[in-house]
Length: 213
Image (cartoon, rainbow, N blue to C red; front, side, top):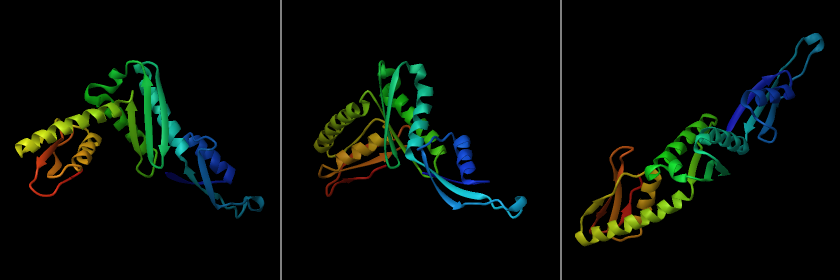
């Protein structure tokens, strides 16, 4: 996820330098020796060691947890659980008064997820994804969206027209598009700009499908 090339008098010094500069702990990195380096007689003709260090997922998991805990202190006692799969870090938050942390329509939670993703990607060479949930909000929101889509589809079918849904986050819009794909003679697409981007569900005489956006 992040590779660092370090030059020092020896391999051990190079690794110590990375640990100090990046706050990396044992087990959170792997390394490859590019050049062992050596000391010449009387210090002449010496050659420095060159080491390529790769930071592992565990480093990013720990840093993300530390970052979130520094923010969540103001929300009371919140349990932070993080698991990762490849470049995706899935965060589950549990505690009392989850409503304040989630915010109206999940906006506080979405903002926290955005900030966490920005922080984590500053540490990495490749794009990392953060998916955050609090008090099973996403599952509850999923059921709510399923109900909203079913109602909208029924109206569109009866009127042979279209329905414009309320503004949604990108992951919610993707959910809507996937649900609409299951219906014949229906299509969906997004309009507007963030944070007011909406999904339009529309009747079509032939075919069906969804455009994810």
